[in-house]
Image (cartoon, rainbow, N blue to C red; front, side):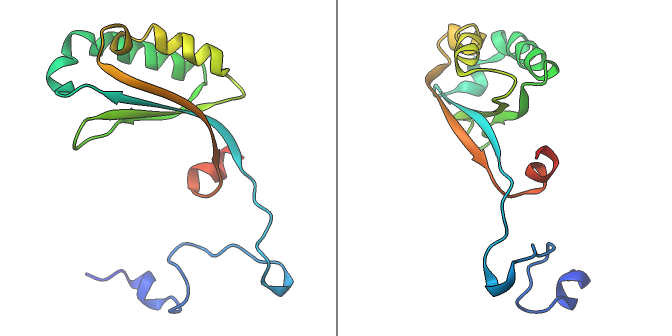
Length: 132
């Protein structure tokens, strides 16, 4: 069944509310949220190999989240070849995150073949609107 809201909208309007623009069509000022983004790359067969370490990994991640450091984190699904963490750079430093990852059971037991941490600037989306 078609979405009535979409069919009633003007053809040039997206389904979400439009942001106001300044006169002359210039883009509005953007409020962005600076984050840290950590990316794991997993070994082949991660789903089969993670079982002995998963509970401890999830407990460590939950503690980091309870400390207010994690906006969102999780693994890629199909294929399960990595994971991404989005973290509050105001609550955890890059150095603290490196130390945390060094102690992650997945890293310590060789399930993570590569790890990168970078600055990430979230600009649009309902989550960003809640954070800024």
